[in-house]
Length: 464
Image (tube, rainbow, N blue to C red; front, side, top):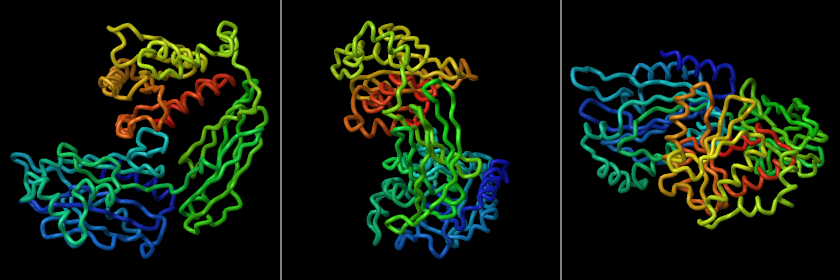
């Protein structure tokens, strides 16, 4: 068993919040036996008898589509089986190895990796609903496995569509059975993904900071999860002094739909224009909120000085919310000014053709080793391949300065509902933060109240 597997097992045992293993597997028969095409395993807080079952699945002689439920005390044995390259799934021996190459007998075992996928991090794509401990492993690509099977991709899709419990092809099976957010293509590596989700979050619709009082609500699917949690709060007063406190979770009650649990919390934060609320379970931060108090009295000297030239910020705001393609240059300058208001040191490459490929601005955080690589657009996010160029430029900066965190950001003058959902998903898949018109409004309000770079960085991380 690899050290990565041991880390995952230790994290799960330390939390002690899960009772069942809910496994979902798609495998195909090849000339060398049954090979995994996709396995996703979710640790569940419920006992095995209460885990939701899929009533009918399109298994046949040529493909295996199976859900298998086991008690949590079998987790270590299961991980050992998978790490050794073969596991018993629905009475079949499913192989978790790469397709053997020339002169290989069995093929190499998968590469394993353990991570804690914070819901606000770039790993959110792995499990979109909750933060989770994640054990992932990858092997051959789909095309290689299907190449050793009597089924090709078209035949596999046709077989799934025509049975008594039809799914609309392999991609449909992945989305609704495996719950994978991004469908597999022929060049995608097959893998095993195991998640131990912390099944609780802040209710953002019930959370606000107003008039010196922070109010929020926690919702959870598991009573054990919510009883194991607490909320840590960090903020900054109008005079620049930090405020820190911890609020214990009390008054837990059943939610109205009787399908979960909830708790309302309140904390006094006088003269605090902005604050973070961190939802913690043990040493893990499983969700976070960033709240701005519209009634807090604060002043940003950078904005005040600029206002002496541009009364009421009229010119700045007009340029920042421009949607005319002819106004792209003014928009770029306005975005640069906004991040200057927020305390960043901004270097603009807008209009410099030789330098601006993939990035219009670099916003340096003077208080931490991190920089925002910003691309601006008044149209669609991926016009002229903007996203790919931004990711490439951010990657080259990371290689040049590995000790500095480089966060790629694309800033749009359009509102979120005007943006292409596919382009937003593509940006998030590549770890790119999407700052739409709504977020610009929020950042302008924060800048007026003297928010620091940390506030903007938090907004960026929440938008990835």
